[in-house]
Length: 271
Image (cartoon, rainbow, N blue to C red; front, side, top):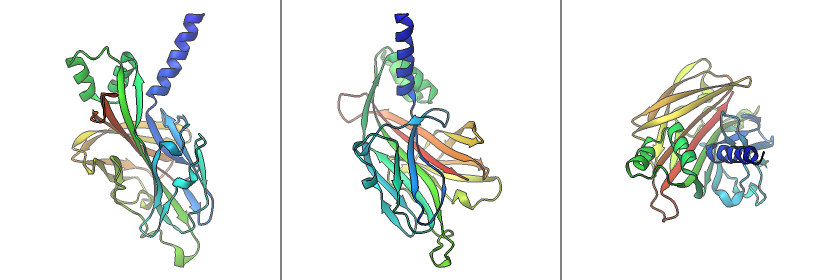
């Protein structure tokens, strides 16, 4: 019985460590001007995950940006560990990019779990290095930073404050890893092939893969999409919720506490 209990505890612990998808999950993606915006953080797998238990100590920046307005939202994230904040400050209509930039955190896991995580997330550079240097039986020590974005709409019936057509901000937020739409996904009316730029350390990511998640009526479809010269092309249907996620890992240059530095990026939106 004890062995089974330890096995179950170890499985849960592995799942918690291995659950690297991290995203911003508003209660909904479309609000009326002046309406309170509820923002949640999710971490886990299958575009479901669980409540994030971080707080403001984990956060470098939390902002909402359009072409017309900017809001610093970090003050809404308290020291109490939790997964949501209630925002009553976004009073002007527009398309907003909300972004969370986390602080560097240290993670350690046993060799088998770390190797599995590298393989499943396509981090072949790290996995191959560990094998070639006979380190594949050593613990995995990693610094990681999370870079999450969500696209929301704030609507208004007042024409003078309706910036929906011109408010979309299509630039980078300056995070280490970032997915940037070349056009506003909310403009499409039918299934459309859309382009997204992928930036790593302020430069186009040369190659790699992202995961495209699409959730409709509780059912989630996931596809692996190649990055070509910093760009991905995907078909977007204006229904349900979407997430694009990716991870980039390189040898750590911070200190000797970790061998690897990873960055986790995500972009969410919904219709």
